[in-house]
Length: 114
Length: 112
Image (spheres, rainbow over the protein chains, first blue to last red):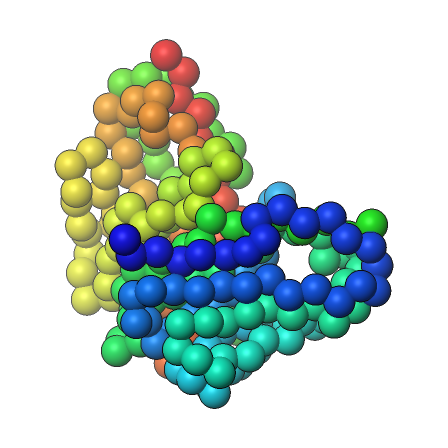
C-alpha cells in the first residue's frame, strides 16, 4: 500500500531535549516536505527536499533541521525544542517530475513541548 | 513571497445547500491551485485541483473556478451532505520554485 509513515504519532517532551520525527515514503517520490499545522494558521512549510542531498527552507524553518540521505526518508530534527514548537506536524511527498501534483500526507505527529 | 488569503474561516450550511469558499493570492506567476480536505483527526487529502490554463474544473458535486486576472479561485460544493463537514484548505504553487503555500483553512459544517 502506497503510504507516508511518520513516527512517533504523539510525543510529549520537555524544553531542550533533542528529538527526531521520522518520515518514510514507499512511492519512490523525489519531493518530500514538512509542514506544521496550527489553529488559524493553516499548514506552514518548514523544509522541503527535491531529491537526495537537496534540501531547502520553507516559510518557518527556525528551530528545525532536516536531512535527506536516502530517497525514502526525510527526518525532522528539533535540536532544542521550545514550547512554541508545540504543534501538529505533517510530512508529505509527491513525484518531483513536475512542480505540481498531489501531495500525499502522513498521518501527522502531535508534539507537545513542556 | 506568496500570500494566500482564504474566506470564510467558518461556514455552516444546511444539508442540500451549496457552499463556496474563496481564496486570493498575490503572485501572478502562480500556476497550480489545489484544494485539500481534512476530516477531523485525519490527514489532508487532495479533492480537486486546477492549473492556470484552465478556468473551471468539475468533479461530481465539487468544482473549482479560477480568475487569473483577479487572482482568486473558489471551491464550490453543491448538494452538501454531512460527510462534507471538514476543514478545507486552498493552496497555491508558484511557477518557479517548489513551495506550495496553503491558506488558513475553512471549517465547513453541514447541518442535517
